[in-house]
Image (cartoon, rainbow, N blue to C red):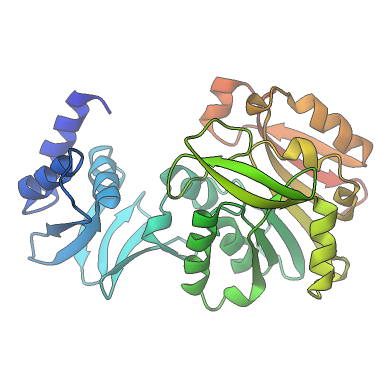
Length: 326
């Protein structure tokens, strides 16, 4: 971060906390060796909350950018983007999304959560009752909860162990939705076996087998067709559902999954493609999907697409010809 911005953010935080100076000093010293797990903040009404270093940074930067309002009203700590509540439940910080879904604070990713609940890039319909969604690259369960909230039955597939553990916490926070979500800790790929997934942080929405991130996790992998068979063994018959959806955000694996004939089982595909990390373009996917009978359109789901180019990064929304959906 720019040093001048750091200073401005620090000075702006005096509008947030009574102890803004000591809290900010503690945060910055922790970056240089001071062992700090939590930072205590004091509101103007003397309410006190405990923030992790990460959340302290998120809050003061979001406030500087005009995206966070501190409220300190009982268990309501503040609000992001005007609609996402930050709550304190018995000393545990959680997020309440616009539709009521709850998320553990450790799974907070401003970009990904904004895509799901603000931009609603995963929108399929208001009523997804009797719909089946196979969520490949489920991250912390945000899209699984989003779809389940609207009535769908979701199989949430996430390979990275830390992401998966965060997803399990989030499912536990939503007991009304949890029965409609089946979590699976596996990587979907072109072959059955094991593969190395690279990641850069404890919770990482950009983890990929094709990146050059710092850390590596050895993960069980399986083909899409193998996964479908395993679901059948669990008593999940996707053919009994009215509409079958495959949502894939697996940072490169889509170029392997597209060769699996099991794709024909689905009525709708929402595939985020990352051709820039595997040296491919969207044309490869488009040709194969259209050969399977899908009508597809590519679109930019965030501003990064405009920088990289829609031919190398974006989202396909595909519908099987002859399928009528709401």
